[in-house]
Image (cartoon, rainbow, N blue to C red; front, side):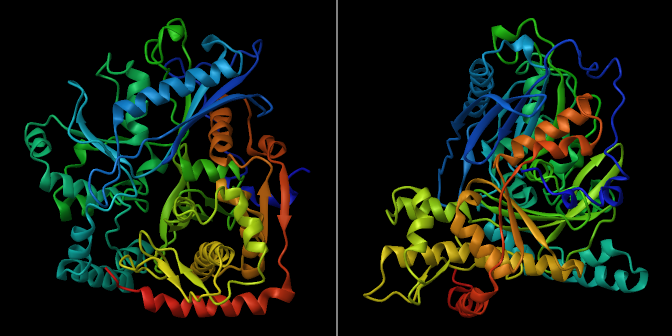
Length: 558
């Protein structure tokens, strides 16, 4: 069935009635040739896989290709990606998707890119020398540095001074500053770690031969330069990739001079930030993707982060719309509109997207060990296939008193204990695999409900519906348990590839394939709505209360 009308109601408040449509210029992509069929190549580079889908004007998938990302673990807590190995996979996946669609590169109307955030490298783009691999957002190498900073008098003094400024000015940016701290998922601490510990990088910085690449800026450079043939291609990143780095100030929409001053980072090594309607992305270099592309001039129509792509794919355009992506991590994003909201519960304000200098904001909360928990349990042979977990969980009435704490990366907001341990509690001789699997699935929902409650507290709004996407969202037990415990409707689309769809939607708007977000609503079909069951609420709410008390048992373990 079609998406309900209320999912786009109120767009005017968030988007001034429509997303601005950039006017094509000679230096930018030309308007689409209406005499040709439209085919959008949507590239999504995530934590675990690289995917490319080719979609037509009706957003039907004509072809696709997927390849796994090889995560390197050279030391405990280090999670890296070899950049050149990743580039080879990107090239292969794009070419295979076009072949799967039974098309030629010359048939592609435009390319759009969605990437994981806060994964970065440093290099000399002129010589091609890398000073280290991509350091992913899950990497924990800077954990000690994070702990030192967050317990330092400098941080406490800065927080106190920011709160005093807030009391004087009532400006929300100072309220945000009063709770500012470092987090492992941000680029800031991991970049500082590399500068302190990587001699080659320090030497290159002293000779002005190093710059920072976020994943999107690196892919854009490789595509636009022909894999390094044109080293004068501008160094740019999109605003939705920069906003979560910890180096960017969403209130001023610029790299933060305060962070630069506090940590001695020269912002000149960072890419220039552009908005999502940027007209200067240009084209894929004819030599970037292989000889088959030598006679092509494929426009790059959009570049955006995976979470923004998921928001667009879930059609969260209006204030208070909320989506939850259930992938490697779980990310809750709630649209707060044209004003940046100062979050104080451990959630954080971000630029949801920006077009023609009009920014729309959101608050975000994350549980970094969502899909990771499922993958770990499978490796421990609790089940053979993740698809089996819903049936296993439903085969028992409850967990038989067993609880699981999903904290491989600690517990995020609103608990904010990044030294928490992971584990089961309450095991007895009568515990079965089904009890353990149910406890595991319940625990990741408990974390989601904590995020939902924090979001409602932050915005003083009662949510009504949650749109879910990502691989774990295909689990019926998780979705129904989430609906029952949150007492909110949980809406799941037929197509779980929200980041792919969102990247295609934004590309289509930018490239003139569609004019307004209203043109997009017909492309999102709701597969199922999970409604809350009041009769089970008291029982499962009491289980969450007991699980919440168990947090103290795992707290501050490391």
